[in-house]
Length: 182
Image (cartoon, rainbow, N blue to C red; front, side, top):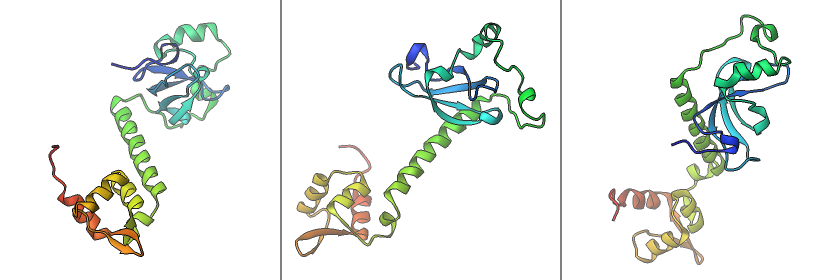
């Protein structure tokens, strides 16, 4: 069931999107309507020069795509024809549900890659991790890592009094974890 957003905007709906004032309206797929009226609405446009993913304010989405003819009747100042604004050889595509799924997957992949880049190359080249770094690298809490060290399930080496966990040991521990939930 699509979640409702500001003024009845729901995820999965198509709305008219006004990218620029001199451009015609484009068909936009609502990805995330946001939790309240002032929230940014995440949309995807996949035709014309406005193609891409955007986070926009409610004012950029004047009406549902199905209500566009009635809206244009009351707003004659809005350009109707893409060719009047852009050259006729513009690469335009008809909306495609398969493309929408692909674009959503592409956005997810971008988020994962961005998160990996923020973690930095240090996690792929480090020889040993502190407890905090091991927790961040595995997604477990520091308490879990310390508990596993205390129970001798994870072997730590000590530099002075600080525990460090070698990369190979961390990988061995992760691969030894059970595949089924307790």
